[in-house]
Image 1 (cartoon, one colour):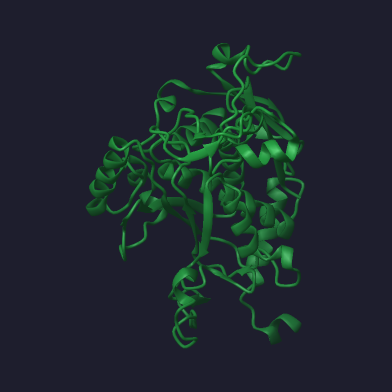
Image 2: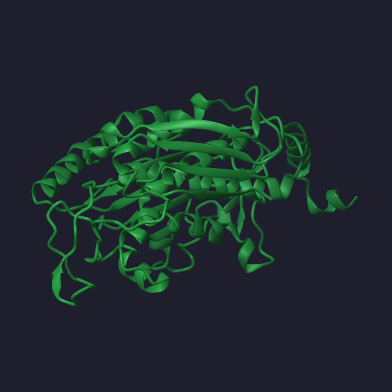
Length: 392
């Protein structure tokens, strides 16, 4: 079973991620992982922290001479600002000179303080911070490398930023990822990119923030990942959980789920046909998002994550209560972005990759990448046999 764990705080010494269950022989380099971390820093509307806080990656365990060993892989992403925070975030006994008692609405601050019995919001916010997604992105790069061995590729693009949407614009393909990343807002539709930038500028001028949505597209997914037999094995449920776990995500849509719920059944489903040229079953529409009955159909998978506007504003106006005095006040300001939607798409790619890689390992197994690929190829060679032929 493939699984991962992250540890670390936003302003701590660093973030650590352990990925367990990767088969041996997966080729991976520090530069490949670093490239994914750099993609997470993209996007117009990010705060100054993105300019001076580098992601210093160290491969600690589980990789030798550019290949995984089959043992847990451990990675560390150091915090280059640690010297500024060493006293405030020290693990040694002591107490902060500045206790944060004005919890920010929309954050984990207040409920975390209540749950764990803290009187300082920093004991909560440091771990709840979206900075943790750096570790997820690193883990996701390993999952992407494994999926690539099965011919799977994953991209994302921004489909909404604030009130600006791409509408019915064509979806990008795997070959378009470079163009998407070159966009200031990671949008594939150049005609609305400038409108999105202007929306960000207007929000920044007002000291406000913006949410939006990013669609993740998966190409070349094997048939049959996930399962219909148990509620916790359904692929769409697993993807929804993975995407909803990203900080500030408040909704997930698989395929056109947010639209088809308002249609009649005769319009809401993907018709199936046999393509004699490719010798495969084909669905020409994407209403179900490439998943039926909790299992991948082998077609394009589409999952969209919807992000709320960030709760920390550059102009603190959201009312809260000082937990020390119980008096009305406004939430304190931590460094923030106007929007993180473009970066969220990269994190969403990582979470989708981790879910799909987990299900691929579950289905095809193998202690080595070579064994896993053989199992996949054997399954693929017989998948389109007719039921009568498979029984013969």
